[in-house]
Length: 128
Ligand SMILES: [Cu+2]
Image 1 (tube, helix red, strand yellow):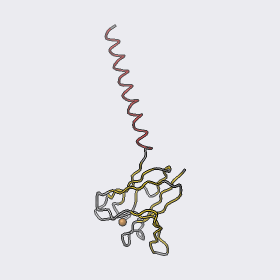
Image 2 (spheres, protein in one colour):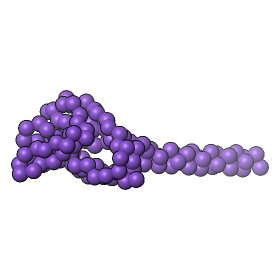
Image 3 (cartoon, protein in one colour):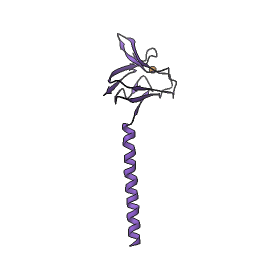
Image 4 (cartoon, helix red, strand yellow):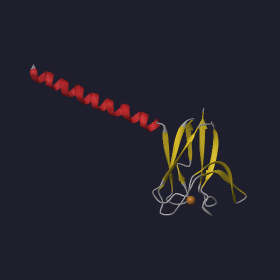
C-alpha cells in the first residue's frame, strides 16, 4: 500500500514537471521579443517577421563581417533610408534592439555598401 502511494506521488511529480516545462516554453516563444540574425552571408534570418505592436526586435550579427539594420529599401539600385530606425554598425557578435510601437510594414536594409543590393534586406510587419 505504501509503495503504491509512493509510485503515485512520483507519477504526479513527473506529470507536473512536464506540464511546467510546457507552460514556460510557450510564453517564451511568443514573448515580448524576437531575434533576427544578420548573416552569415548577405541575409537577415528570418527575412520577414510579423510581430504585435510593442514587441522588441533584436538584431544579432552572426557573421564575421560588420552589418547594420536601417529602415528603408533599395530603389533603382540605391539604398533609400526613411529614418524610422537605424542601428549602429554591428561587429560580429554584437546586438541592437528596437521596439515597434506603431502598426505598419517596415522594410529595412543593411547599409554596408553592396549588402542591400546583394539581398541583405528584410521586413518587419507590426500588427495592432
Ligand atoms: Cu550587411
